[in-house]
Length: 380
Image (cartoon, rainbow, N blue to C red):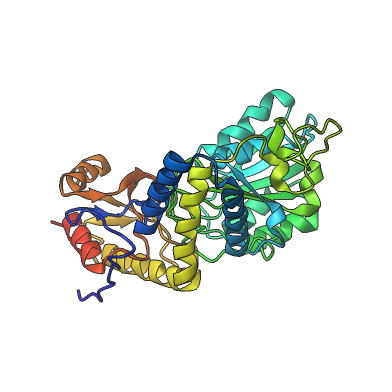
């Protein structure tokens, strides 16, 4: 089986040469520029303290503009920087004015972050409807069929963390908008890997951590709230940073910020902001269309290999080109997934146990030679 070589740019990444890193759907390595940005920021802080805080604030706004471009939001004012996806989901779940009898539609493949938060509303009389999308060729239709007159919100992952199933967000978003139902997208397994358009898919809320496909740090996350629905979310956290005139510390007649900064109650994570700016700058330089193409080529390469060795491997991720993204999950037929995972670990292959099998998630820069080496270990 021949394979083209995708060179890993030395200036962008410097991973241990003995490591085959196929775990970007969990926690990604940082690009060199990101590590450099954190070192530079730490050095500046150590020597100058907050002397350059006005420039740090400019960087904070620049990151919001980068994220605006990444998801094609109408305005950077719709972007907030929170701690993680779970916090952003909680802002939505505990900001909406629920009434007893309402329901939320999700899928049965969601990561716990996009399940537990809705299930926690049970005490308020809100039902969580987990749609079975495992045994259907049309998961969008199955999700839409679960919507009824009491559905307030549909919340799905753009790409499922376990199976790697990619959903048609535009179909779901259009159905929700037509029915007056809010549409929430956990994009953590999509942003940085796939083209994403918040306006085209009619998302009301989008959230994702930076530490997966965006190649950024943990502890900082995107929260997009469409301007037209921002007032629907009541605030549960208050502080100096979320008011309109947040630099006027002596002002007592304060008002909540008109932008998504209203969801940022306190001091920003400036270390994470500087790191994320660097990571996003790399994605922008290469271009998401090119990144998506390279990731999908990697996925196709893995899927073809697994299907060519069907006697030893069972593909879990959908093979259809429009149904997968960067995640490819499979299970061995002649040993347990656990034993295969441990065997791969002993060979310095970084991957994960997810979705009932072993999950590979290479990024655009993953050398094809390394990927082929990992795949050969599956049938060794």
